Image (cartoon, rainbow, N blue to C red; front, side):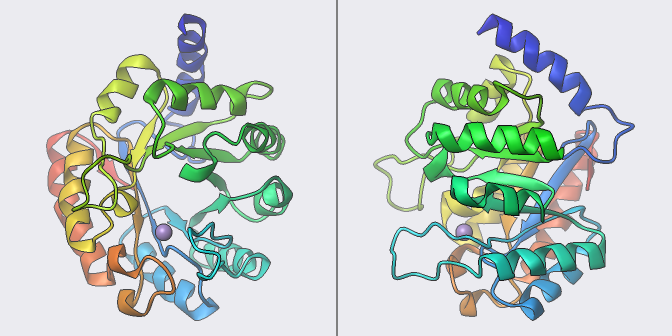
Length: 277
Ligand SMILES: [Mn+2]
């Protein structure tokens, strides 16, 4: 572990180079990545992007390939969704994040977005992690690695090594809740992971409260807590019309709720000496 800490330390100094606008995580900033669970149409994503830009944010998320628990659920617009994400990202000057679900779609996703996200179901898919590391390194893309919902922090940090084994690529961890006996939230958001990761490694860590709690009214308080705990950013699901969303409607913030979230977070970031981007 010691060698890796040194390696991550070195990488961290590159990542936090305040001169670089290209970094997903910047020192002194909280990076808020907002956007819909799934890209449903050009118009839907365009309307989401307009709000995100108005709020002064830098990154937009949107799912094109959707790994769903049920094979009968909406599976995403796939290549068509990637095209919308790229076009709308360019239109508004927003950087883009989407999930990679399979070794088959790594290249096409890397050709269309800025950040490749690895979901909770794939944290232990080591062939996929290695391929994403290789492709992201070659094409100069960033990687978000979500924690497996039944994975320990040690297993999570070891998964990073599969991504970085053959390449030097910016990896950002994302805590998204773990499975416990508690049923009043979708998962249990393990916010202690934030300071633990800060203690064990030099990797940046963001928090996804949306999938952790699974209910939109709990997203704002847990977002506040995540930032106060030292998270470098948030991954937030937001939708122009959550009740009509094709997936995860109950946990996506409406445009007004997203605005309220940013307003409240500015109070916290002001106190801890950071800015929102
Ligand atoms: Mn979702």
